[in-house]
Image (cartoon, rainbow, N blue to C red; front, side):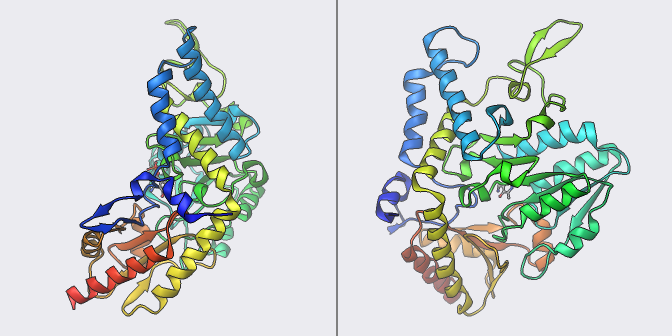
Length: 405
Ligand code: PMP
């Protein structure tokens, strides 16, 4: 049974007042709050086990290594990776995409080839491909979207060809909430011999992901949007592909033997983890995943669907509010503009009502261009949000409207 009071009590930050009003945190797409168990796991590591990993023979180093590698095992299980060698720790989704663009892209994308992304990508899944294409003389192609903020799948199929080396697609859009049909996209991309990278930065906390069932080549995400710490994320990739990829960065941990003549690289996954890793981050990430598992995606998806439906119904009848992103398949993001109030002003007024939302281009400027808005206000929900908080959002919007009337 999903017990909202118990869930909220797991997140200490939620229990506070701003400007004399209870905090309403609706900026979960930017980063989620952290449950006490994650905070404790990180503190415990520093209080009891802190040491460097993989190198030491002493007890603390063994404990640190067990914590770090234990987290990898939890993550592999969560995403149903074939084995732990398929889980590469990175600083986050952005670094994971850069790793693939640089290492796999550098080795496999040539002049005349195409990389196909979509109009709703986060800048993190645009710029690395743009840089790669410029570097090697390849072409970046873009799948268009419709007025609801959905991919136009017929156009996707037309753009796909034997020149396409890679398709990069966001699983769930941070700017629109759209959930993309990644299974179909992967199948069609594979049919022309292209690899697929799915940006799961938003999706991974909200829907179950099975990388084997999807047959996805590269899946990336960040811990901090999954109730875990900042500065850590993963690239999950097929071992058969990772084996063929050159290292991304050089340094400690990614080598087996170094001489001035030649370096022999380490096995997977260490070949892609140069330098001392974010040990406490990985441990916190592992604990965050266990927290998600303890609640379960059935309960999470049900709860978040209810909240989105509740908020959407209110948005639809709110005078002067235009929703940006009304896809049929959508999750827990309400992006909108309000007549006569700039999103940034809205964000500031809402903050005085203790309602935290995001205002801006959400690192998805092409989406803003498509909808012809400079920015949107975005309320994004998580499993700990309540209907009362949605009410507080709309009461605050009313107030903002009155101020600007
Ligand atoms: N992709 C999407 C869809 C995102 O929402 C974000 C974060 N806003 C990123 C990529 C980048 O994630 P990070 O900054 O954690 O690397």
